Image 1 (cartoon, rainbow, N blue to C red):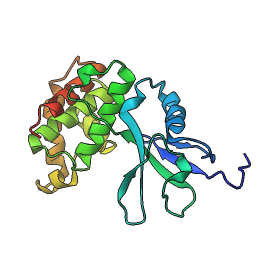
Image 2 (image 1 turned 180 degrees about the vertical axis):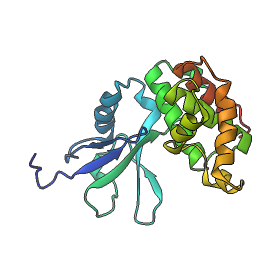
Image 3 (image 1 turned 120 degrees about the vertical axis):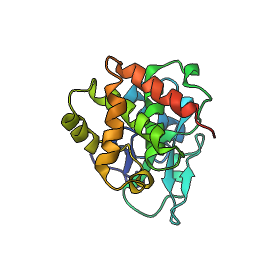
Image 4 (image 1 turned 90 degrees about the vertical axis):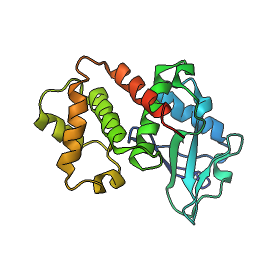
Amino acid sequence: MVLSAETRKCIVHLLDGQKLDIPLQPKLLTSELLDIVGSHFNLKEKEYFGFYYYDIKENRCWMRENKKALDHDFQKINPIVLYFSVRNFVPSVATLKESHTVELFFLQIQKLVFQGELECHSETIFKLAAYVLQATHGDYVSNNIAANDLKNLNVIPIKTQHEYPTPSYCELKIIEHYRNFDGMTRGEAIVNYIGDVERLPM
């Protein structure tokens, strides 16, 4: 596709790790960009979400919904890099109406936990990681399979890893919880994960 001189290439990072290539046209509003990305998830509750970018000083900046996308103070790089994210959290996900929304909240919270932006005791980290295993891979089969699956998941913050002598210790603690979740559905694992996070002291 040939872009006009005023249109800029843009990569939008999604919460599930995927990326969308979206050309930003001069008149495109941030709210319209949200409609485009939201359609990727069949997302109806768009009011909880937004986009952020990093300025030249690496500050996180949220895009304004009623402003043209290209009127934001992006770095002079091509393509523009944006991050689709939860912007407005709710006291309880029980107030959310759509399963798509709950799943995106789950991915966002999982990211915050992994990055250390949500402070959790290590035992809570292990239990939360076990919920992610259950939601992603289903019931426990064996320690070896669970350990291999864990290697592909971002669930243990660097700080927690440094508290213990070996990664295998953390894996075994997670698997202890994981074995107790036999029969738990993906939806139940997601709701339990979020519920445990909601009960954390803030």
